[in-house]
Image 1: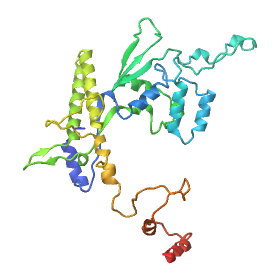
Image 2: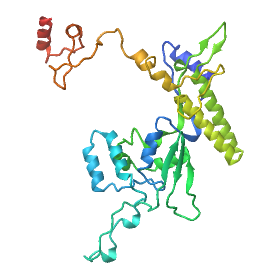
Image 3: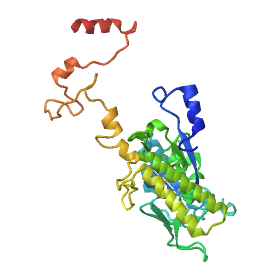
Image 4: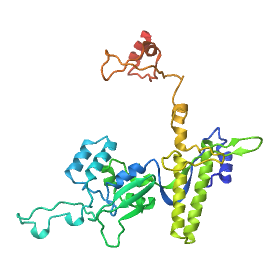
Length: 348
């Protein structure tokens, strides 16, 4: 969907109304190649280190006693579950092979045969060490599987997306995520949402001149870079040209979300001023959360200086008397609580 769609604006004005009546509707850009979401790179690497680089299976069997113990102990604490699974997989450098699934059938009744370690149908291949520098990931092997295999390769977002996409729903749950709402492969962007115009309104300058919002300029750069990548792929351009297009697309998507990434040059306006990214609009005292959404001098909120009190229990908070006498909260009156409500009103 274009950044400014005339057909969409006509429908918007006729059927829905103006911008004061409707906050607009999102569009999307289908990216020619997957790119990393800067907010989830660390989490994606953590998951990559828990699964096989080749077959996407967990490096520890789901039937392992420690895995079952982690799942039981971390019920309702999904964030901790991934940390526990990560610690369990940290020392694994081989995917548990399928030949380890059962004890050899010929020796199943032989009590002198030592039992083999039970696997879960993995590929049995050596795992690489995944390292990160900025937004560049590399996979490095200490033990090479084949003579022709390289010891160190750059890890693209497309390859990471392929690995994460093939993780089963059962193993996603073991790692503390809900496959209906948060699959690991969703941490790599294949489609980019385009916010509606009220989110990025144009500023009217002198007379009829209009200065577009920073997000609009950045989305325009993403569309241009994405279209160039599609053209180069279709025309069979050299590999290094396509790699440079992907790198530029990754840069534009990253600076749209966060323009203060360490080790990454800032995206600038023509005047030399840094573009205001989505993260910069939300965080800090002047951001949307603290600057617009959080209450200041409004009903049902109060603020005070916090101090310790030796008379309070560790799980108690003392409220100043003047605030306690004035602070109220809405309570629905029902046949079950009307007597209690009347008593509170009588007390004042």
